[in-house]
Amino acid sequence: MRLRHKPWAEEFIASHPDIVVPNPEEQKGKWNEVFNNDNPLHIEVGTGKGQFITGMALANPEINYIGIELFDSVIVKAVEKVQAAGQPANLRLLKVNGADLEEFFGKTDVDCVYLNFSDPWPKTRHAKRRLTHEGFLKIYENILPDHGEIHFKTDNRGLFEYSLVSMSQYGMKLEYVSLDLHVEMPEDNIMTEYEEKFSAKGQPIYRVEAQFQL
Ligand code: SAM
Image (cartoon, rainbow, N blue to C red; front, side):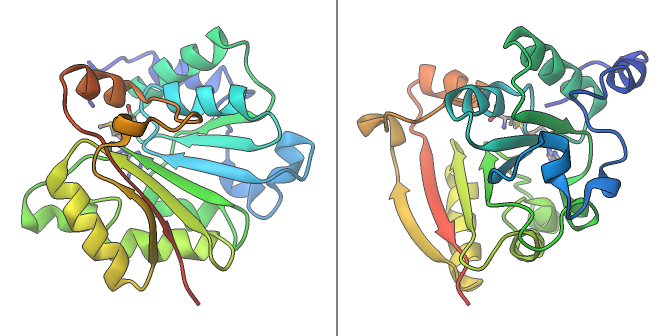
C-alpha cells in the first residue's frame, strides 16, 4: 500500500509522540512503562491504516497493542484512525521496519504477533521480503516467549501456501487453519481494511495460527 508522498507526514508523526512512539529503541525491555501496566503486548507487523489494531485495542482493553508500519504516509492514516477511536490508552504505533524488531523488543517483550494481508512479493527473488520468510520467523521467535504465536490472515493463496510451508519447515505447530475464515466467522474476528475489501469481492480469507516449538 503506497499513498502519495506527503512531505508533511514526518512532521505530523513527530507531533503525535503520544501515539507514534519516538525513539522506540529506548523502550526495549520496558514497554510496561509506556502503557503504565504489565499487561500482555500484542503487535501487528504491517498495520497499514490501523483498522485491525485499533479494533483489537478497543475490544480487549486488558491487552496492550502496537501497530508497526514502514511508511510515513500510511501511518498518518493509522494515527487518524487511533484519534477517531478516542486514542485508547492500550494502543501505540511504531514507524519502523519489521526487519528491525529486535532493536525495539527484547526476548518475551511481545506475547503475540499478528500479520494481516502482508505484501505477497510474488517473485521468488523477493521471497526474503515476505513477512513469513524464515528470516522474519527467526526475528519473531526472538521477541516472543517460548511457544509464542503468530496469527496470520491473507486473501493471497500463493502467500498462504508459502507461509504454511515456511512455518512448518521452521518447526512451528500449525493450528486453526482456515481456507475460508468468513464461512464460520469467529465472534472475535476483527476485520482489517484489506479483509473488508477482498471479502466484499467474494474472495476467501485464509487464516492460520502458528506456535513456535522448543
Ligand atoms: N494489515 C493491513 C490490512 O490488512 O488492511 C495492511 C495490509 S497492506 C497490504 C501491508 C502493509 O504492510 C503496508 O502498509 C506496508 O507498508 C506494510 N509493510 C510491508 N512490509 C513491512 C515491513 N517490513 N515492516 C513494516 N510494515 C511493512
